[in-house]
Length: 117
Length: 109
Image: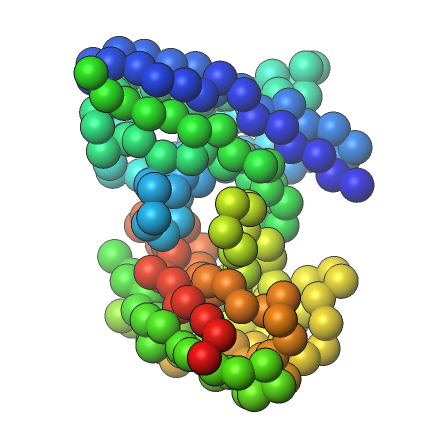
């Protein structure tokens, strides 16, 4: 079955940076649009960023635009999220998710990012 | 910008009862891009319904989705113990590219 495994979360100070990774397996990664979705503690789901299968089209939520950068390496079956200028409100579990026809059909288990001094 | 509103915020029911959850969009949306997810504590969300009414692979037939335009519903015909969770609706296709509703918690009465 499809597997998505996130890594790279942790504790970072406000203004700091962090790079999340998502390792994909058991499907043809290069054929799928991929996304990052986050969930603050005790809160709902918030879409963060989208990247097309080739990486040529990229979208961001307004809340992260200019600070976060999504990328992918299809040769390594990996999705990334570079997060700069982190704020307390970026504290959340970050999920990578596969997209099919506008739906998130598979999700990773998530990685927790805590922004605090 | 499309905003999704879910009601009620919490639904308290007993196992075996029927649950009806509502998702309303601030403007008419395509049913093709309306989905529902289930999330249990400590777990990632799971896709239940896509295209407003199509069950995802492996989803029991007690789950059904419907609606069009601005009003969509998720129904659970007879609640099983494992169905007590938070449910989110989601839309794709506008700015922002993906939008989630705030969720409905179905808990045990």
